[in-house]
Amino acid sequence: MSHALATVLHRGRKAASNVISACLASSRGSALRNGPLEIRQHLDRSAGTETGTGRTNARYTLAMAEDDAPKRNLIVVAAVIRDGEGRVLLARRPDDRHMGGLWEFPGGKVDDGEAPADALVRELREELGVAASIELPITFAVHEEHRLRILLLFYAAHILDGEPKGREGQAVAWVPVTELASYPTPPADADLVRRLTTGGIR
Image 1 (tube, rainbow, N blue to C red):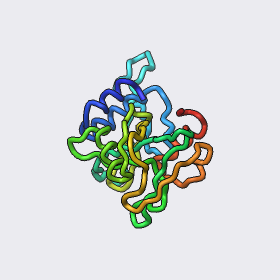
Image 2 (cartoon, rainbow, N blue to C red):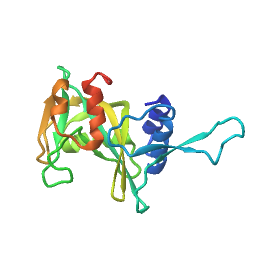
Image 3 (cartoon, rainbow, N blue to C red):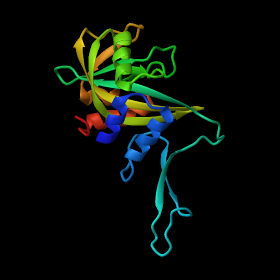
Image 4 (tube, helix red, strand yellow):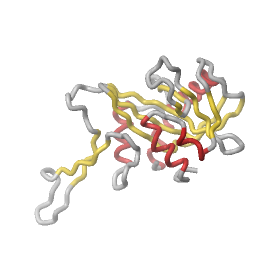
């Protein structure tokens, strides 16, 4: 993730659509390897083409649902927390919730007017009962569902105080990096899991 984008995210919460646009723009010229992400590159050969040069302007847009229904944009933050042995903290979604039973990096939704890093501190305190320090973003992912577009921001984080326990009844586990792939996770987490297990992110 570019330094410029990380700076934008730490300054405060922008409108979700603007932050998503910034994430897409930051990826120009490089392949996005976010697993199930419905992100596509479109070459606009009718606009921005210079005669005789073959130059085109690339437009990066989100793949839209076939019904063209407007989608609500949502920003979610999640933490990659390691212990002294290098294990990564995962939390299991309650069975009665969307994607119940899957393991995820702990975090939650960003409230209106809330900075993403502040939201993550709050979520970790509310869900796991820990005080945490948040570092710069590691990566991002975009996940689309019916009438919903979710931008996930993954941050490195450290526990300052407390022992993580599921305060909403969810199980938590410290997982060795080599075993991360054996835990079923939401689709949007898959690429981060792969990069952690292969050493793409340390």
